[in-house]
Amino acid sequence: GLRKKEVNVLCLGLDNSGKTTIINQLKPANHSNHLGPLSEDWKHVSQVQAQEIVPTIGFNIEKFKSSSLSFTVFDMSGQSRYRNLWEHYYKESHAIIFVIDSGDKLRMVVAKEELDTLLNHDDIRIKKIPVLFFANKMDLRDAMSSVKVSQMLSLENIKDKPWHICASNAIKGEGLQEGLDWLQDHIK
Ligand code: GTP
Ligand code: MG
Image: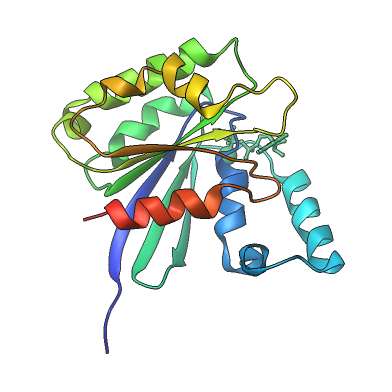
């Protein structure tokens, strides 16, 4: 039979930005979220799962499939003491998801520093892999718009890779499918 192409996706971004919450929403148990209105039961499960998410230690590996691809997602910890782990996975990656807490104005410069370090790394600079940004936590009252986030991070300077930014609310699963559809279309 046809085998799905296997791709490695790195999920990066500062601690508390919502990486694990996003990945959890993509897991098969939650796929009903994207197919239609949730029954009350599923809403409950989804909210409980979101509440129980704890800061990632090191990283977690999650696997899931779309119609054409078989994804291995590396959900990295964003805590500063673990950020040095990120680079060990750059060589093998076919795509990057970079998550930003749109409400965290104070640390936007830190997010930009980490993004710049990533994009200038020897193992990433030369690769034309797609980079998907989630301007997450769009539900927060003082969240910056995705346009504002992309300005703060100077995304317009990324010339050698396809990139895309989506506003998202990972707790409700909003904006995630749009981003993933884009990513899937741009993975070679
Ligand atoms: P590390 O593993 O420490 O790097 O953090 P992370 O990026 O994996 O963040 P995580 O998914 O653990 O989420 C951090 C907190 O933000 C949790 O309390 C989530 O419930 C919350 N959160 C995630 N996404 C959203 C969102 O879209 N809106 C709101 N309001 N809260 C969110
Ligand atoms: Mg996490």
